[in-house]
Length: 267
Image (cartoon, rainbow, N blue to C red; front, side, top):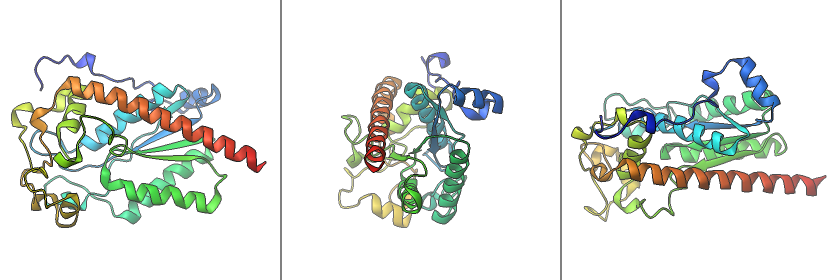
């Protein structure tokens, strides 16, 4: 466990997490105006020697809860735990779904919440490998019936591109930023004594992330890290998380405004 961090300072508000609520509480919340549901799509895969395999799912829960609380009119859905992770299968403990299975699970989630009366569904991927499947799945809903329900897909790591402390050149898996988020939200799960630097494109600039995706992370990084988690701090985790949540909420509100204007024009 990270020294100097008090667990209570790093907890996030779980009051809007539906898996901890009864159906009566959910019904009451929806009747009070909470008609947006946030679905985090994570993964169960290795994150180097210093982080647990639940990182992407843990982040899915934290981000969906933080976003729902910040929006004020939203609830956080139970996360989708396994994702598309074949490039991590060389490391024990990793679980992967196929693109087809992940898409089907996402569709069933969306259909379930649409049938219950949620007016906006937000899908947030906390694992980069899920992004293309999530985007295509959401697009399929629009092709079938655009008026069914507004669905907003957000790629967590795409949302981080503008951050001064996020550099894809230094790697984007079990890196400084992911480890910092875990120090902020789940300090008890970070094994700082085991954390070590992994492969970065600074070391081998001719190799990019697509090589690791095709051949497996172990092809470029024997310890499973793509980046340098030894630089991580809880302070960086909090600062970046606060900015990220604010940015995601702005994106959702802008999307809702755009959908409203579009529907008004169609009427």
